[in-house]
Structures are given as structure tokens and as C-alpha cells.
Image (cartoon, rainbow, N blue to C red; front, side, top):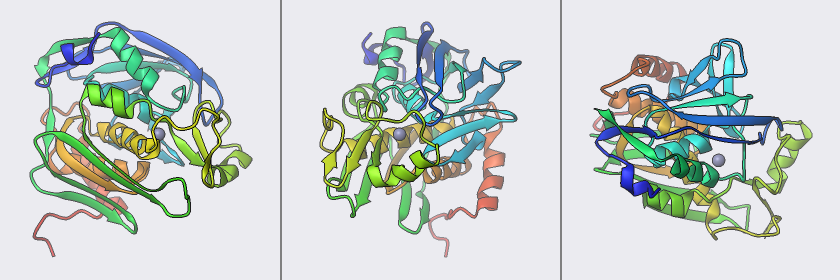
Length: 315
Ligand SMILES: [Zn+2]
């Protein structure tokens, strides 16, 4: 399937048929399998822990995010699923609005640390245009989140565009990297999907020692030590790291539950700040079709967490 052939920008899309993959979780080291299935109009992207009694559902929306170090975890009552961002990024960028993701296990398989295999699966499944229009969040005025050295700004734009700057002054291999693109399925597949998660050797050591990265290794992450990449095959792109930051940002912004018409400019952001912006975007311009009543809870959550949120013209 060519991703551009079946994807509608006006109407919602789901998969034509279910597809499945299994592998090891980077954090838990546990085997898990994921089956991505078609879902009806208006249902959005949601997980279902089919290994637990009653197969509890966990909607892929910002209000269900429970933070964990180094990845995005969603939870609903007693059920949770971690490392959701790469799969959600692929689904969102490929134009999938509705999908039921049946997962056996607490963590989405890490695969090769990128979203390439998820895109391959979506292509294999094919997309089906549905009968309900998509819900869009159209940014009318700048929305921003800013704390210390981390900044995120969403500007009005007719398209979904992302610009990311990362700055690792202590890592001679990365230093500063910048990447910008308008997200469409083909550019995503070519420029973003193959880019793997990365870690600085010195930074991940404490996590490994504390047993928090049980399944991580050179087969599912780019590991950098000083000015060297430890993976024998090297990097897939010289700026693979910033491209992966964009991959993560797309996955986290998908948690708005809507399509975005915005240019998001991110500087040194990570999962928690990305999700904070996703919440702010939902408050600013709540999607017309909100299945889970997200916007009220987001406003409450923004107040509780003291997010920086200002309208232009505010003092
Ligand atoms: Zn990532």
C-alpha cells in the first residue's frame, strides 16, 4: 500500500485489517505482543490490556498519562501501558484516527527503538476511510509552555509542522541539532520513522544499575559515549537524534486526541513537557468531538500543575 493513496485529511481513517507484532519491552525486559485492530468512527486510539481480567481499556489521551522516567505511560484505574509514544507516533503520522491496540503485557515492544516497523505494519494493514469527519485543533493564537531551558510554542499554521532544537553541550557527538518538517505520511516514513531512541552511556548507567532498563541494548537504542556511537552499524542519519525527538513529539502530541493545525516549535523538550503542551492545546481549542470529555480535566490539571499558560496580551 502507498500511504498517500488511502489516507483522507477530511474524514477519519482506520486500518483495513488487524496486524500484529511482538517483542521485548526496553524497560521491563518482558515479552509482549501488540495487535493493532480497526476501530469504529469516533473511538480514537486506545489500548486494551487483553492479558488482564475484563480487558480494561486505556484511551490514548493526555489526561491518562502517568509520567515515568524516559517514556510515556498511560494508565486507567489499575491498568497501564508504557512506552506508547513510538507506536502512537506512527499511527498518528500515517493518518490513523481510530484503532484498538490489544496488548498482552505492560509495555509496547521496543523493536529496533524506532517506529519503522510500526509504519511497515500500518502499510501492510492498509487504511480505510470512514464516514465521520476528523476533529481538528486549529491554533488561533500562540500557545506556549516554558520552564527553565525547555520551551514549546504552538503557532497558527494551516498544516501540522514541527521544528525541534536539541542542545547537548557536554556531548561532542550531538552538540546542537535542529530539524523541521511538515508532517505527512511519506515524509514521516522516509525521514523520521527509522530514527532510533538514543541514550548517553553515562546517563543510562544509573538506570541500568537500578534495574529500570531491563531490555535495553544496542539492538534497540543508539548508545553514545563521548564522541563515539557504540552501535557497530553507526547512525542511520547524522542527525538521527533530533529526528527521534520529533518522532517522540508527534507521539506525545497525538494525545490531544485530535488532528493539529499548528506549527510546534520545541527546544529541548521531553515527554513531560510535550504532554503538558498537548494538554494546553486541548484547553485552548478543545476538539469538537470529544469522546472522553478531555478538556475539563485538562484545565483542572493545568491549574493543579501550575503550567505556564498565557494568552497574547496577558501581562
Ligand atoms: Zn522515543
